Length: 201
Image 1: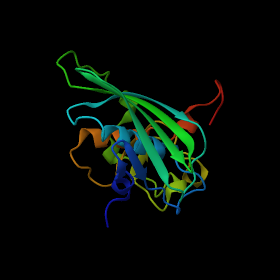
Image 2 (image 1 turned 180 degrees about the horizontal axis):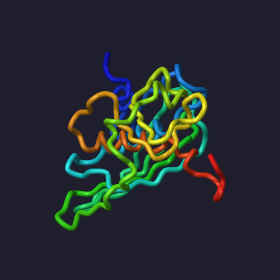
Image 3 (image 1 turned 60 degrees about the horizontal axis):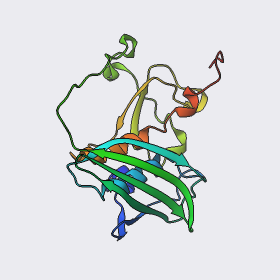
């Protein structure tokens, strides 16, 4: 059986700049925001030359998505420059927008490349235990393996930052597809990390 995550990102082309995406009905009552973000970014990547990889994005949730209702992704080719391309994508169900995405794509160029070293307390993910299902809302799908540094809350959710996360199945060597998977992951554990100053967990 094909990997569920890759199935979600395998869009059906409905025209030059229009796509349809799967919205399985066997999950929670609302579409997971990360799923919609990843599918919308995927639509944008399919209208950009493969030499240009995702560089940045801004996303806006407008309405809750409904499982089992067809999701249409309309891409506007805002600009194609010499090194950058820009796309605007609207995700809609039954003719109503539910999500907007603006994304920039860039041709790799030489220059400084740096990253701050990770905090020492993150440790080695291979020595951490992985709970059975830290994101219980996606028990039917489970596209990711998550290894939190601290035990998850009651019932296994939420998985509190920081945690290690990776796709359960190996992904094809497509940088644009990898960026879409990261967009999916970006909505995991956000609520648990955004809390009032001074509040305790």
